[in-house]
Image 1: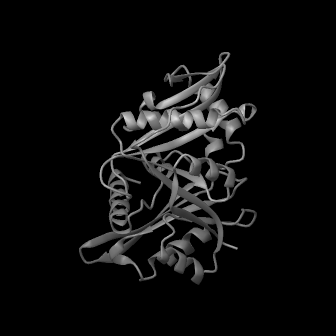
Image 2: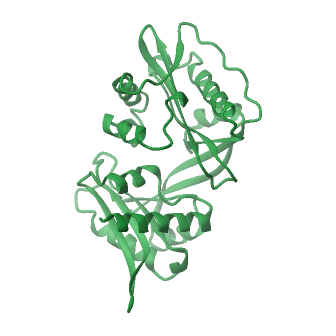
Image 3: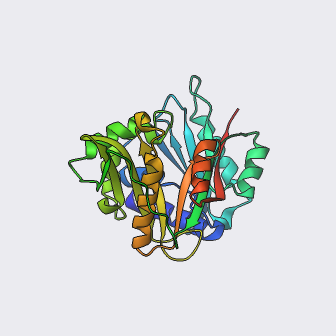
Length: 297
């Protein structure tokens, strides 16, 4: 795609976010648009033709880079072109790229909007997964408990990269997206304008990385005016489970965001992860919305 194509897709996504109150494309897709490096990632565009040329009215992204989990997709339609069959046409195009031997196609519907649920129902898609968005105010943050033998320091770009990738893979061995992150994935995010090593907290025990809390600050939020913080990724070595390290790192990250002057923080958690939801609920987080994944049977 050309730079003009990418700019048009970003403008389409921003228009949809203003209308729906939720971003239709996650960070991973925006990075694919920026770098266009994966041979098994596909971009589909829907255009309305006219005598003056064409207008972008829909976009879909198909990621086939994870054969274990199967292909996943995102779809966004311009607000002015909805209820005209554009979303269904993009879904048909996606399904044509799923061949025999592939696992079933899965499609994200960010925000769980009624229009997406209606399209899924018409096409016979089944609910596969829910990703909750939880939020809490940052007016008060309890002090973080100390964990014996553990020291916490900010991430050092270039020095801690490989140790973090190794721990992230162990901490998220069960998670299809997060656990597969590579050094290139890490460094692509480090190159983004939002990256701040001071908000990337690492926990060490006897020289070994055993936990981390990577925070993020969004310039704007669908949930309110002004910047908002995010518990971007929180990970703990499986050998450290049950020692209170996750709670301590969570509170240290929240305090960092509060000190930056932010008034709210969000996080994403799997809807069926009851232990994590209980922990976050105990820290003052409540469910705000959910991203829904549908599966083509």
